[in-house]
Image (tube, rainbow, N blue to C red):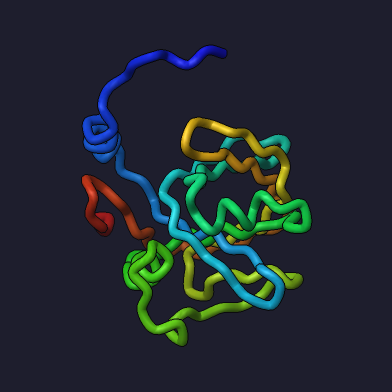
Length: 161
């Protein structure tokens, strides 16, 4: 596949795609004994059979460096609920008090308590894509609630309704 020489400017691209409402997730992994997380709205289901998801991670992000390591075989996806804006901000580089993060573990993988859904994924495929890397995850475990999601639209958080 060839890459086009020119495209729309990054600002215009960001503004245009900001019109697509998305849920908000926190991607989690363990770095030795440290729990790490990163807010991501670029998350999508890929396949029901096998159960695959995809998350896009900026190549400059600490999470990218962590997920690129061979020793990291699993990562978590935590779909945030309507009341979890502070957690989204915390893991998007605007840290709040770490003690406000309600961590729990599933088979050694850190997940976020209170999220409306959690997925435990085995790294399935890694695809370089411009200034991001796409991580496909094979879903090995999930749990969910019926609470409302946190929604991101035009650069702001929203709630359903």
